[in-house]
Image 1 (tube, rainbow, N blue to C red):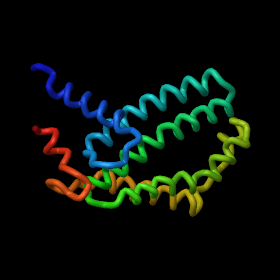
Image 2: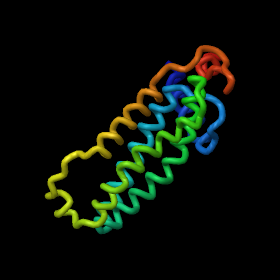
Image 3: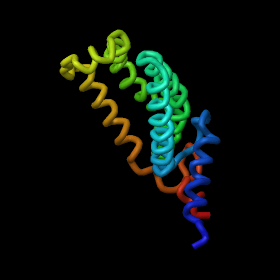
Image 4: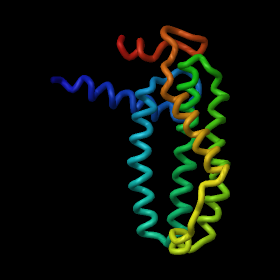
Length: 163
């Protein structure tokens, strides 16, 4: 085994990183999975380090900043994923919905002490349910198959990978 699949995987992740701020073209579902795994590993490690080394609220703010930084490349990737399905990249604005809906709860979390936040009994309200529904719609859009062959946004990325 010459590591061909590992090379292809690394090449795909590097392509995703290189196109972090480019919403044009098309992306495969595999790119989304690799991006999610990479950002989850980086985010979890960074957030753990920040919340361990810094006071509670400062750690949360640093974690929020990291999420904001990673949102932009994720937004571009989602737009390219929608292009693969021959949909407008403007549907990527759906990513803002769960963020906007969960913002009030997040602000309340920053206003409380850690013990108070953990001890508080919180019931999911309509905004949390709406955020979860929006997240589910986004997940479905990310996982739907793309169009076979070229479409108005470019060549099929699966065929380009096979060449």
